[in-house]
Length: 311
Ligand SMILES: Nc1ncnc2c1ncn2[C@@H]1O[C@H](COP(=O)(O)OP(=O)(O)OP(=O)(O)O)[C@@H](O)[C@H]1O
Image (cartoon, rainbow, N blue to C red; front, side, top):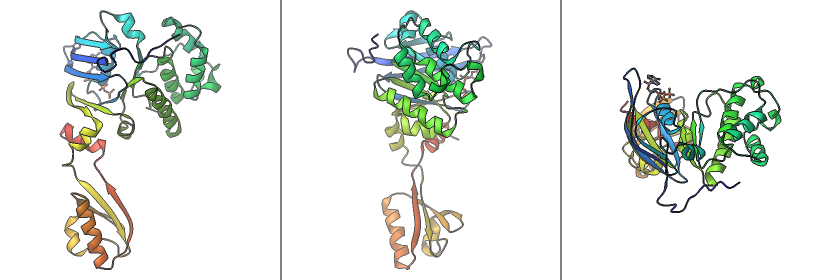
C-alpha cells in the first residue's frame, strides 16, 4: 500500500486550493463570501474564527458535504468533479461525534478502511490506536467510550487511509490536558512526515505553537491570511508588557507613569522595546531596589486575533 504524501512538482502543487468559495444556505443566509486561500503541501494552517464565523461551513464544503459556489481542490483534485480522488486524499475530523454503536473501536476503523478500499492496514491501525491512546480500548464497544475517547476515535477514523491532507475541526474540545498533549504529539509527527494539516480550535495557544500559516475569518469573510511569523511581525503596534516584582513592592517615582496595572507586589508596565526594559532596570538599580521576579509579555495570537476582529 503506497500513500505518496508529496507529489511531483512539490513547489507548484497546493494541497488545498480554496478559490472564491461562497455558500448561501437554503434559508438565503450567506455563510461564506468569496473565501480564497491556498495551502502549500506540508503546511500546518490554523483557521481561526469566532462561533458562527463559517469554519465548519468551509470544512463541509472541502469535504464535499456542502454545495457551494467557487472551486475547491484537494491535492489538485476538484472536490465536485473528481470526488473519489479528492476524498481519497483527505481525512476530516468533524466536530460532531457519530459512530455505529454496535461496532468495537477496531471494527469501526476496519469498516472505515473498507469505505476507502484500504486492506491489510493492521499495522497502521495499531499505530493510530497507540497514537490516540486507544490501544487498550481496541475491542471495547464504541458505546462504552467516554466523550474524550470518542473524540480521539474520530481522529483515528479520519486517518485510516493515511490521507496526505488532514482537517481537524475542534479536535480537542472536551479532551483533557494530558490526552490533548498526546494528540498534538501524534498530529505533529504526521505533520513532520509530510501531511498537510488544517486545524480549527478555540485554543489559540495550540495554533500559536503548531501552525505556520494562519487564516482568520469573520462573518464568512477572510480578514487575515499570512504566515504566523508575518502576522506577529505586523502586530508590533500591540502593547508589550513588563511585569516586575521588587523587594519594595509596587513601582513608584518616575517610573510610575509607565505602570498600567498592579497586583500585590507586582507592577505591570507598558513598554515599547528592549531599551525601555533596560531603562527601567537601570532606574531601579540606581534607586537600590532589588528585582525579585520579572516577565516580558509579548502580544499573543489571541491579542492579534482580537485586533483583526476589531474588538
Ligand atoms: N444548515 C444551515 N442553514 C442555515 N444557516 C446555517 C446552516 N449551518 C450553519 N449556518 C449558519 O452559518 C454560519 C456559519 O456557521 P458555521 O457552523 O460554519 O460556523 P463556525 O465558524 O464553524 O462556528 P463554531 O465555531 O461555532 O463551530 C452561522 O451563522 C450558522 O448559523
